[in-house]
Image (cartoon, rainbow, N blue to C red; front, side):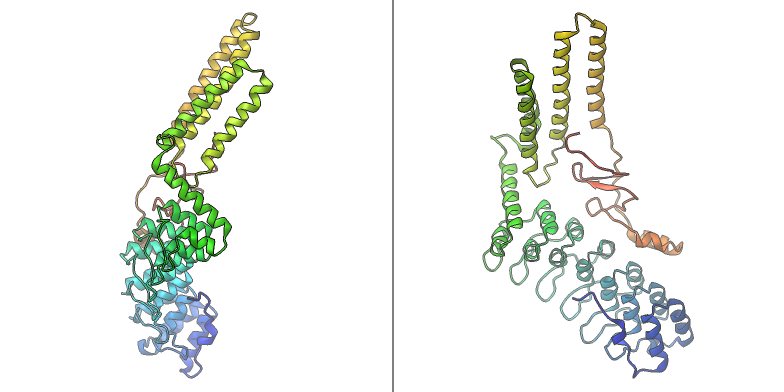
Length: 429
């Protein structure tokens, strides 16, 4: 499935002079001249005639992303499902390959078959998944394209997206109903395909979306074993840790639910810190407290899966503030409370207010974008009508929330929500 198609080699010098000229204009991306010539010719049979390589003018215009010319051809009732005999690719396959969302829209409106396969059994969705074009994948699936269709090798669009490392496409396909553990004729699941091509981002996405790490291919190899056979230490280590962390999450830690454990751990650390502070000099207390902080951070970071541990992070952050507050307060009581009671009282009030504001800040809405399923069909119709093509070309869709992402927004993994004007999130603030 090559994504590089040279238009020059498709020009057939044996066809009529008019048709040859049209292919030359398409090769040079001269849309206005093409539309003018097409209007003059207005001959459906001639305009549908393939050149020596079997590609028609509609195919070439889809490859070159000339959506205005595609619209002009379709307005003359050119067959939207015409295919190349050698490979069976239709114009929709080629529009998905080139990433031309507008041409895909025009073709579908003109009756293009979303389930039409080429001679390898690949559907348009599979070509869009190969290219990682999230907009086209979303468009095809919103128009009820089958997400679990299989090609001649029994691979699905998810296999192809995983193989080519398009992790955003992987997430979108799964969220729109793709079978995450489906196997092809070699017994390879999507995660096996990603491992084969060393696509770590796709592997991480598949793991977080719940891929079965015990699934075996026809060689009786699990994903971790397959990575070991391929001698990829990074992927093998990641899968081993992930599998272990998933098992710990299922069983719990010391018979306590993982989320609960990470929430009660900070207060315990706080008590240890206060005990050390009360009994030990400051030069002992400081490194011990630092060690507790590093231990907690390591414990959280060793879990690559999405634990949704924001309560634990909030609890730990608050504990740090309380540690600082109590330690400073004890120092003041030892030195200045008798001499300067007013200053000590003000300090106490401001510390309590600071902790209150910190708790309030943790509970504040950081600017969540409302979840409402994005209707890409209405969006395209509106923007094409207003001729706002740049907005279509710059379209961004959140593959988790299934919404159109506004400018500067970003998906926050801690809350699993999109946040407007997202800059960054510090883990322990």
